[in-house]
Amino acid sequence: MELLAILGCALLLPVVLGEDCPSPCSCWSLGQAWGTRVDCSSRGLRSLPALPRLTRDLRLHNNSLAFIPAGALDSLSHLRELELGDNPWHCDCHILYLKLWLQDFSAPTLARLRCASPTHLRMKSLGQLTGNDLGVCTRLLPTKCLQFFWRDLVLIAGVIITFILVVWALKVSKKLVCQLTLRGWQLRRSIHKTHKIQ
Ligand SMILES: *[C@@H]1O[C@H](CO)[C@@H](O)[C@H](O)[C@H]1NC(C)=O
Image 1 (tube, rainbow, N blue to C red):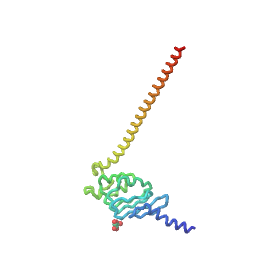
Image 2: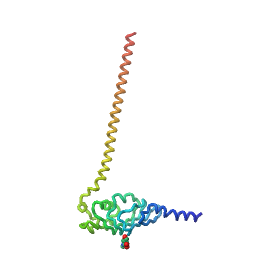
Image 3: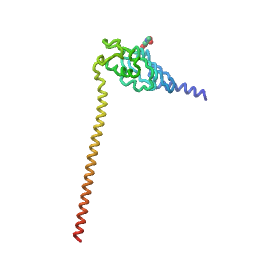
Image 4: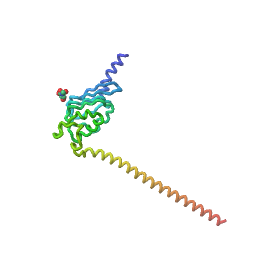
């Protein structure tokens, strides 16, 4: 029985880990409460692979990464260790996400990373990049603008629907009042008539 359980665990563990371990990397479980160590170092990666949700320790050094896609690290709430050295970081607007993310996560890591390109920023620390170095990052605006657009659209639609409902309610109540006064008037007339007959 025990043997079966051990065998089951031995079979299950790589499956569980294999399920979300990106193909060129190696993954180890550091225990359930801890999360996963994901080693993607020295794999010649040009883009960030899809990472396990429970990644705690992420090694990405010595690859060909030029930037980290915006938002790619946001869902990794278990992340504690991150190695990003020896990558040819390209310091344009696309690097802004990594720079801002590392400012919160680990300032020393940020200071150690250096731009590989463009030429005028070569060897400059990511931590020392200024707005002037990156120029106008208009490309980052559209998604934010779009978010505002949708939010505003929903708000405006809400206001219009409320307005229509209020107008409709007013109309109905007006009709009701009319009907009531008409009935009251008819009633008074019929009473008047019966009085006259008598
Ligand atoms: C860096 O990665 C390459 C493969 O992409 C490997 O051949 C080389 O040995 C690695 N260098 C170090 C210092 O690990």
